[in-house]
Length: 383
Image (cartoon, rainbow, N blue to C red):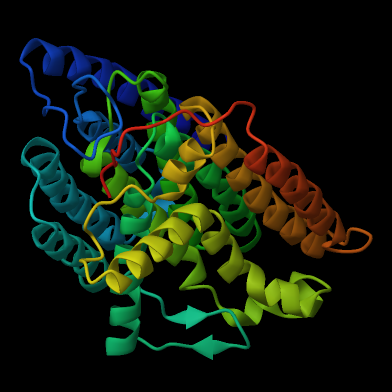
């Protein structure tokens, strides 16, 4: 655990220092776009924070290569190199979009290219689904499922990047939950992919933790598409390294826990739950735009965070409510996992009770804002 804590702190410090430098340079040389019609912020703000997050991630990976503790996944470095190469592709395209607003088709093509690099050259694919021993296989189906999963998660994370501190905080909480889950699996099964997943989750936590101080409302710096797409890419890789390659036989109720049904679904459920809000917003946006005859990537002002603002929540209040929803579902499923594997009385009932109480509290806070909605201009954030 000490090595993972060091990784988190190291990544956070490097990211924070570089983010501060990026902000100062961006302000000095005016490396920021003007206010667009769809933007929520009212003053020009640099969108190059993804650069700092990227180099924080690269620095952490570089240090891990020299750390004997992480030899377990460096023994076969292809997945790590593929993730690095894919991250470079997505960050470069993201930077270009943050500066010049690329066409959505170009960005989508880059996302498929990055996902293809991971699936093909890194051989990090979804080979199995731990539900009833379902084996996907290593052919075209596995490749396509992996690529589309990565692209969907990338866009889901990017779509909620509309309020100060929203993506950084939600991903910080979500990956903290997933870090705990993957650490338990890595400890129990000592598999290289599980250790890689835990390391990636730690790196994401560090990058978000280091970036959040400059991104908190009122934000000095945005992570932009470069940062949001990179975080989504890494989150998808972390989930696939466990869920897509988990041997269904380890879910035998005699070994894994007393609840066979829940034990079979948690490896699928937890990766989805930690990105539940981004996936929900992404799905609603795609359906809404396609029904209107528009591109699924055309911007609008109907994201979940926009609706929160229209209900009367302040920017900070809306962000904190999103944090709460993420923590409720993520920690709830994690408690269910711990209960089934530790033999708690009632197995997963404590987790269910926690989720039920948390959802009730969040519903009250969400639908009873503390102030009346003020008239807002017809603005929209980046998709």
